[in-house]
Image (cartoon, rainbow, N blue to C red):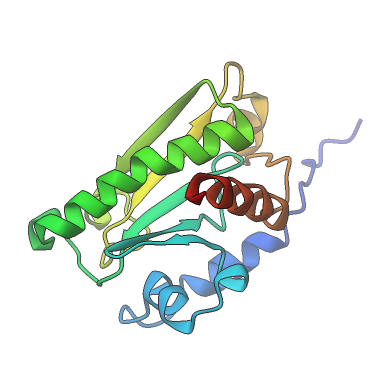
Length: 168
């Protein structure tokens, strides 16, 4: 065995690195919402005041973001109907994820501001992360990487099907 470190190749991460370089005025959430190419941009659902999009760099299968349609930075800037739309979508996303993945729990949260860990501090969004007993393993600890077992396209298809069933 050599003393050289093992390498884990994750070339898709370079897209994320490149996407974080540039103007602070760029907002991937606004761009995804405005271009109206839901499958390409991974938008699962569009509501009157908020929408649901797959996280392109998920912590687990089915990691979703819920964002207001309007570009707002803080909870204080939200109108009451936007706030209701966001929190109503938390309920619905957990229903869709339950139907598609049957998780045993969820992490639901907001990172408000850059110092709080917000990767996109200018556009408030809620993370909905499905969790399962034993879903953590040694990879994040030893290698600093997460193993996601399903492609984003497969996840998108499953969740869109759950949304269609829900709408009936």
